[in-house]
Image (cartoon, rainbow, N blue to C red; front, top):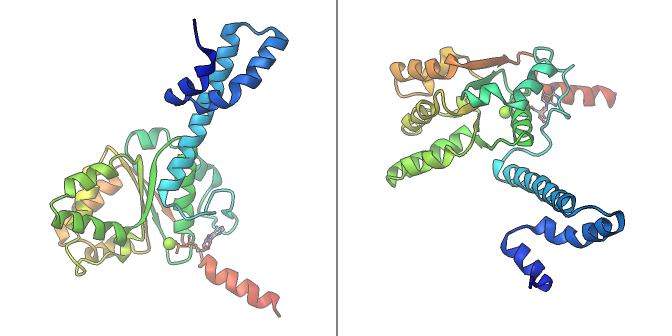
Amino acid sequence: MTDVAKLPLMLTELRLPTIGRLWQTFGDQADREGWGAARFLAALCEHEIAERATRRIARHLAESGLPPGKTLETFDFTATPSLRKAHLMALASGDAWIEQGANVLIFGPSGTGKTHAAAAIGAGLIDNGYRVLFTRTTDLVQKLQAARRDLALPASMAKLDKFDCLLLDDLGYVRKDQAETGVLFELIAERYERRSLIITCNQAFSEWGQIFPDPAVTIAAIDRLVHHATILELNTESYRRRAAAGKRSSLG
Ligand code: ADP
Ligand code: MG
């Protein structure tokens, strides 16, 4: 004889919290409206699956390190005419480019919205079920260098592999004289044609010689990054400066 009293325990053991919360209400409704057993069970499963997806997305957002509020909804496309909303929305949906491990490279002077645009694409990717990690490039390089010193570089790389897309903010702030930036090249080579990168940088490729240990590595890095890449150039005036100027003029 099935012990109905054990149902809450069994649902906990099976990790079905949504069904645990809903089965009584749904059961009453099923009794009232004469649902068959199959429909009752299907309705419960549907809700469990939907909430599981919502919880997964919330987890992915929490682990992403994305700056809050920098989304497509808060991005003003009239301020940045070189970006088309439809294009950014397409990138934010992921699909082909993420599946192919392609990249997005965002260039422009300081304050033009590179980080905001990158974060907005990242947030969209998370909504679409992908895993994303946003990090300042210098922070990540330091972590990878520490890992290399501890002979744990492969393990650290493997951890990063879980992310469909890594957002490396301000690649141009990495300096080869800070320490060996070879780890950055290794990361780029490791992900090449497998896992995507979104990179923001305020220096043109011609200045990347300051980032990588030697010219051959610089060329090899650029080659791999651009082979399958969408390049976005933000060459408007600084949004920060314009916002500040707007405030000043409205103060009279
Ligand atoms: P960058 O990374 O190029 O230095 P940010 O993305 O940090 O620039 O942008 C600077 C500030 O201006 C941020 O607060 C950002 O949210 C805002 N901003 C930049 N461009 C836009 C835009 N087109 N619409 C709305 N906010 C913007
Ligand atoms: Mg930035």
